[in-house]
Length: 175
Length: 179
Image (cartoon, rainbow over all chains, first blue to last red; front, side, top):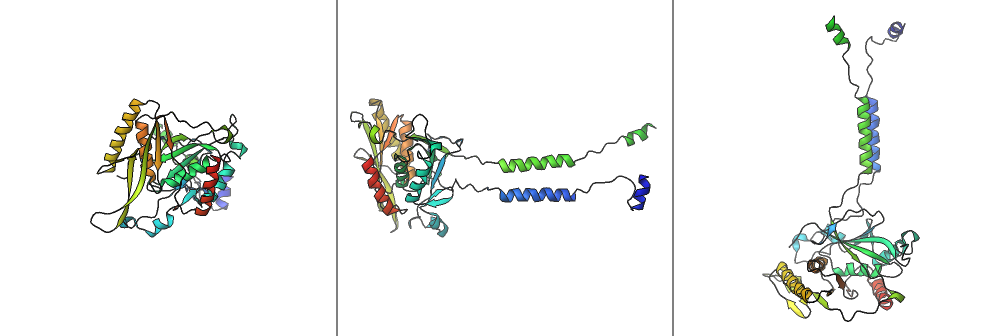
């Protein structure tokens, strides 16, 4: 009965092979969709030349709520013409939080909302302090004044972020 | 007869479910992927006794101060100007041909001081414009010399900080009044 039906439908006798093409098409479409919507950009981590230290601990980055502040390199001096680059110049002297540029006023506002004022990040034992940690990733050639200014903002009682981490490199990159 | 049955029993493996599962796994790992940071960090704690809980200033402790300041100089063989960092141990200027040599001299001095005073406190004073890498290196040296407490001197007075300079001057005064 089956053979008769096949003959009527002009289907050749023998094994029926499944056409894999549509399935593979769909799978690839799905892969492409997920690749496109996935945000691979690591906004938190700017490309910097970090200072070298031997005392540094390995950064496992386990704390999800950690704030990361990036400070980019200064404008290259004329004494260093090889480093003179328009792209470098446009990227210089910037404070970046999650890829967004902030000035000190903006950073103060951001940390004010993210620090001790936020009940979610208030230390249970010492409610006048924030239990959040803050990682400062500052380019080695940038002035320490930036780091000092960030430390001063963090030390403000309205922010009270006292767990500070300073990012360093694993090996010497200069000198 | 035996040959015929062997041909009949030949089993073809269906690869489709395996490919399905492989793609599912691939998608799962792509989505959950997190890049590891190959960096190190220096942990520190800011003073938490501000405001009404402020503790009295420590006077009896012995401090070792390393001061850094930027100085302009000319590049050898040219008229170009470059910034150089000077290092001072107390009031004494540390000289050396290379930064490594200066660091090694500083390490000797702070280690000698630490040997005399076990509870010595390291102080780092970075004048405006001093590169961050030098401050981290001095922190490193204090750590090598086994100093328990290291402090930074003073508020920043760098007028060259471009981001929100006017605002910063205001906030600096505010912060100074709360300390």
